[in-house]
Image (cartoon, rainbow, N blue to C red; front, side, top):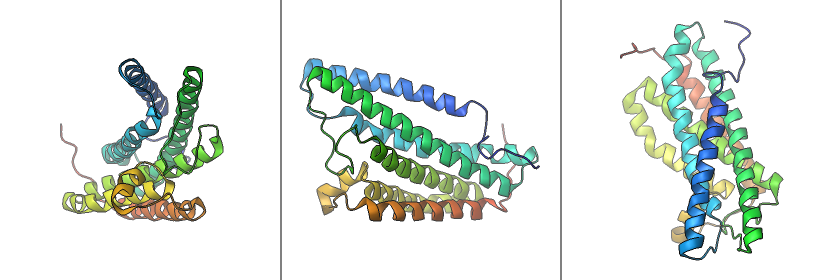
Length: 235
């Protein structure tokens, strides 16, 4: 099949669906913040900690979509290589969307904190110090969401090709996600810093290394999908 659109994977409206989920997530975070304000003291950004949840959503969502729709697309005339290209396009668009939504979340929360005169403190591992550093926030989140989404796609491709291979790659995927977090100063750097004292490092080094990781992971996804045997669909 020729003339396919790279970003049309796997269904129309999927990114609008993700945006709606993000709105629901933002409401939940707002309720959590309200609870903290009523029953305790607001001392730091709630959104900054909650971003980890959206990161794992991107990982799991990409993995599920990649695994679920492979046989469907092949059955409708899309080659495995074309499907792999669509996975790459999906990872890219999802990363952009999630990065923009996350940056908007930081800005909205910072506005609320400013009105309430609360300290909008972010984790020390972040490469940005305030929500106002929008280009830096976008860059960091784009790299991180791109990496974790790509790793999710790789794990799904491995699992579809061979379940045992997928299971064996689980710890590798976990390490890769942790590495992406440390390189971009998001999430896992907080956890690791308590034990091995990893700092945020330099983004000038972390960004190209993270891009190389994304390229390597997406290359591995294509390699696994390019000639994979399609399993019978069971109901």
